[in-house]
Image 1 (tube, helix red, strand yellow):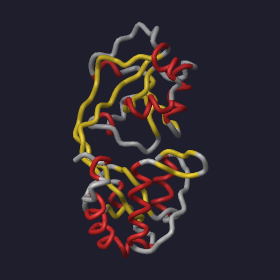
Image 2 (cartoon, helix red, strand yellow):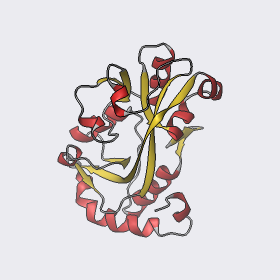
Image 3 (cartoon, one colour):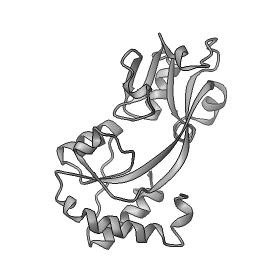
Length: 209
């Protein structure tokens, strides 16, 4: 979602508003870091989260709507300083590096479960870029579209670089409800309504399947 001129825009905001309207509910968007958002969902302090992957741990406290928002092949990049002589060409090259990640985020296996890697958690992508520029981390992982949105054009093109080692995987993104929220009683209805919304001609181009 994009916050601009006092309101939230973007394809996720469009769909969530349509879902809310379908069950005659109002929306109150709560800005938070990814880790904070997950914590709020686990505690029942937020009702719904958008554009999230399924993991066994999250299924303990999240009720996913049946149909994903989209499924696509995503590329995960490793970013380092432009003048860093180290070249990351394989998974083994990550050893002994300080790797920046988003707190609570899920990337790929075996990276997510690898306790031998030195990972530093941050709240958002902007912090990842800042920490790299200040040399507080050696490298960070992220999607190009997310990093480009948070880094100034000059910094992206001249100060950081993408490593040769990249990860591509097919990912499904969902809408999920906190199991501690009363909204969980609407999960079946919302699942059906989401299918109808995604099949609308004006919505289809936003979420290529």
